[in-house]
Length: 236
Image (cartoon, rainbow, N blue to C red):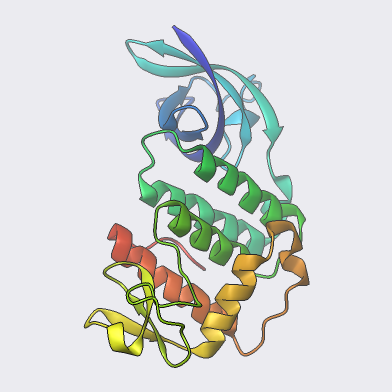
């Protein structure tokens, strides 16, 4: 039995003499493990389709030996990433986040988010880390951990004084509602998060943050991610 999926190649490793074992993130099935047979040969038909970051349509034959990729139509290989280390490492961050999420079931919203993030990194000229920050904010929201910067998530009061991230619930709270697992969020961090959150991916290149706000915002989201999922993701 065969199936056609739209997918990103999340990771791939050598197997046997010329094969590649790969992890795809698919629109239809979530994470999917496949084998590209013979693709390490110089004239292999699917040679380019096995590369990490590749986005395309894949035909997969389900056999007793596993899932074998038999056909592929590359939609975008995001080639400019290979020529810019900052872009390359930021794309690695996006894919490592997806791997750490588990994502064993279909999640169209996450799939679309990956595609938007990859295009922004590769083609739109967004400053370093901006795309990762927006990606994290959006996936937290899609999973029910929306960060509201205007009202306390616990008591509903307008946030006017010090603000805190309650790591237990992944929410912003006021000073009166903070707990032992809450960490203070600096005003510059809040400002950076709000600006990036409300800016579309394709317009992130127009945003200029000062005072290292993006670094503080990223560090906060990294801590939130580790608390939620029990592991850190790659960031350079």
